[in-house]
Length: 307
Image (cartoon, rainbow, N blue to C red; front, side, top):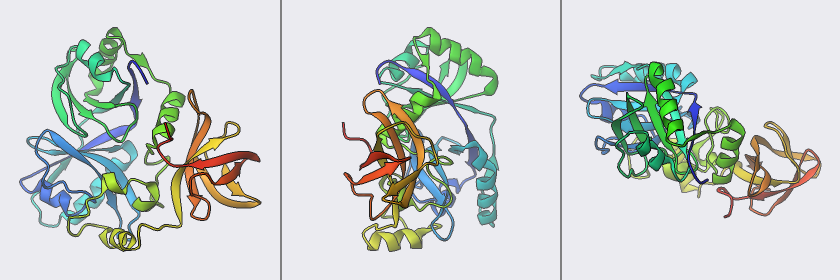
């Protein structure tokens, strides 16, 4: 994707403060957050004891708090679970009123800079506080999103001015359908759409990004370790599909007359035509496997789609 475009994300932020905040989160989340320095971050999962994913999040370590960016409808249940595990730990929780916006495209950083922000080159999940459209914002590199994405945290009352500044700097508004096509092409699933609390981390293909193999115990660690010892073998896995015709989320994936999976996101790509992302049973999830969707031939492909 050339140029730059933005869209609103349905996400919220949970702030965790207190002197032992990183150690506390490190003991619960799937990735190493204790060693992260201010201005940097990690992707991480919060799981239940069976290894089922309760939330996928971006963990941003700031000077005085750790910010958990996650789907808006998961903020309250994640906070409740963290408070349950807090026991006597000196940590506190707050939900700062923030809107979350994504900037995508090869020109995203240049566009944000033209709009007035001071923005250095950022590594994955690195973040800075700056000013955009006259408002104080936090900008993070977002490796969980496609197209060289940046994520911006901004106060809700300032988002209109920020959008205007971005449009004045040449950014377009990205439609949801185009966003889905980019996500499918690059194999970037979203929690609540492609990942739910029915899924294991190994099924999603995100294990390398959201999990540290060298850290100690955390919630769900036994399930992850057991699957790692078995070579990561699971009964179903998230895959891409090249479709014969456009489809819709929820459509069954079939081999013969048997259902072997279900589509989670469907899109029409400028490069690949009709495509989709969904879970496919292990008997058919090898790249190149022939399946059907709504009676039309389809082919299983590895994620991200081969360029």
